[in-house]
Length: 330
Ligand code: UDP
Ligand code: MG
Image (cartoon, rainbow, N blue to C red; front, side, top):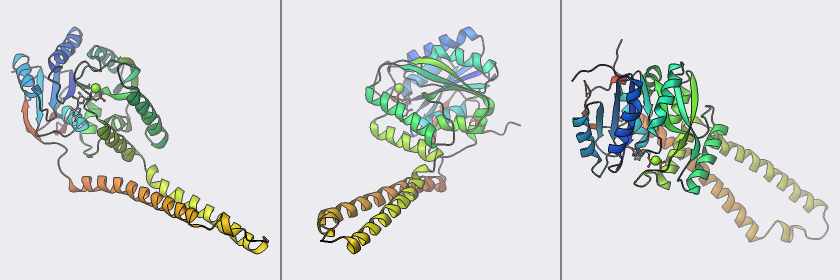
């Protein structure tokens, strides 16, 4: 097998996609062949429990341009993408989902923009088909929120479908943070960025691998990776509460001093109002501790310094023990 460096690497995470990977590889190859440049497809098996691993082996045996990385267990979508870009050898690396929601036919458009000199070319969802209204609405809100509260200008309505120049991939591969929000990191690194609009299709077969629980964790990873605002929220709430209680105190004292009759009786005293306030403040405090916990847990994960992912097997790479993007190639 010769190992000429491919111009384009296509990286795709695979988690229980047995119904789709054959078609996925065919469509990527069909989309890239007209460009007349050498390319590779790097499939990362993220601990699938179906026949995806065997299928990947068979596809690689038939077509050595298709390479495979096997995780020792499920590490999650973002880490699968990370491994793929670590192993990819191309001058440009395209990250795309293997469920055919991102049409491979868009890749040549991304490549064309890259040829114009852009180093990160992200695909922007102009339309989304076949998603539940819940997913569409929460995604739209989330991307708008994250733009508001973070210091990185993550383009609205982009996913992980994007092309990155070798320079960008090498930079990202050297950033080993654990809770990776790749679509944010690839913007954070800078370089010349451009967007290309596309229509996101419905998933071709199988179910979404992102249940609500994973979506929430993903959203929290995105926010905590790029914003301190949730932490500052406790401070703001503290100041607001202090100001309100001061006003309240002044009001109580004034009424005691200047009001005839017995005003304090029903208005301010009484179990119900006391209880409501105690519970409210207790809740605010618990939420604040929870927010701190989200950050502390993530700090703990970084401090432990475990590997981001564990590779059980890799097929088709010249040096399987050392991913290309992590090598010192100078
Ligand atoms: N995926 C993965 N590991 C996971 C979950 C998902 O590698 O733990 C892959 C999955 O095979 C697909 C991509 O990540 O190629 C996106 O997942 P999915 O399509 O389920 O997410 P959705 O498009 O519904 O947000
Ligand atoms: Mg999908």
